Picture 1: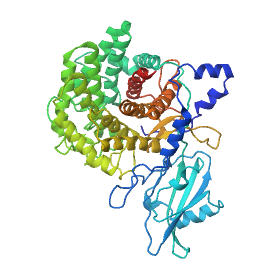
Picture 2: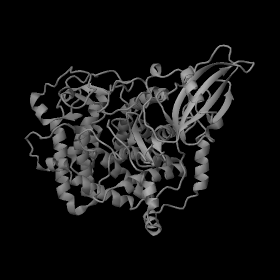
Picture 3: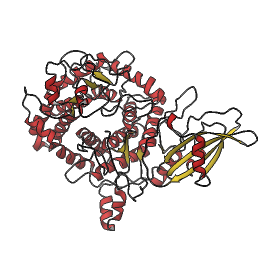
Picture 4: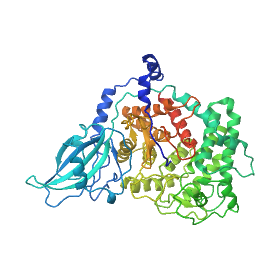
Length: 580
């Protein structure tokens, strides 16, 4: 969701500005179990002193090459200098106002000497310490640093105490820690989910699907087909289960959504039964004979004439939204046709993914070959395999699980490169240039839902949840120069290329944290999940809409509501209801 956005006023001060009685009513609508937050906050503070998967020369890579905000004490890959006996770490407080930016490529950044001169103009450092390595983490002073935009310069010092030269610099936000309790949800999680179902049910896309006649083209402009139509199938199937008076109407809508997906999926070849990522009815008529463009550019642009190129390509794991839709419809209706279609999709994945668990992120529909050779990260597919095993007793894909889990362990986890897998940003990125919470959240949840988890897997799942909090969760926000808050908090940013709270990102973290709590009994993870999902509930409009982009913004064309994100929220809210 690459967007243009402006600024958002935080909702917590709005609540606190209400008359005392009204505020008390709002904050006490849904009460969780009594919790000793003083103990949890102290524990969180201790955890923040430990860096997340710090780099080790010749071993664990430094994954934070493009990171510019931290909740956990970071460490950086600064070079050692000949003749240095130690290194002095100086940190300056730059600003307590909110600013938003992405770090440029390393070769385009100012030199350490240039940054040092600028920081000296700010006065004395806020904090300093000495270490034997320039790659040391900031834990000696991390707990004493204020929340602020912060500048770091590391200087090599010789045995006599004389400065040799500055060897490294970084500018970042030292972010707010977890500091519960946070506002309670203003309605029950179940009620919020039902309201969202009703809002989705009234969406224009659902009406188009309702009016569609089998055997005719599905008329629509540019859409992300698997995500949107698959999510309509799931949302309507869930509504059929939870709101009986709408059952028949919703089941009919879900069936039509599923039939549209089936009609658009190739009938044979490597991508048989896998619906496309991109769809436009006018362009579809251009390729009515099924001969999609096989080599039409790199597939890294969305909008305008690029859709003609994209119609011949698909993101590898976007169609999992269609899988979820088929299974939700089967659960609601008992119609085995849709379960069989889900299994047929999985068989295509089984054949497509190689022995090492590798498959490119984006594929040409006509050949099944990769648009590039960037490996797709398969945490969401692993979750689907778990679902088939546990809910339906299907073990046909156990070997596929082995391969995909091996790929994730030996690549994504070993490199700690939780790169984005979105269809509306480039799949060609430098390592670590566009990290996301979603990749880590899915994989962490998969590990925590295994029947038997090793200590190594538990540590990996913990690291990934800490990574999400470190890079993407804002428990609170600094004000900007207008005295405003940028977006809703507590909230989870989606990716480096979309730095704003997204409802599905809140959901993804909370789902993973709930799985962690269920496996370990870690109350801190439960309270983090609850606080994050309460933002989703408290931001919900009276008409049931759960905004995708959870902040005021200027959007460059199109709406700011994505139904696939709303369905993710519905799923997580229904799960959260079990913990009320």
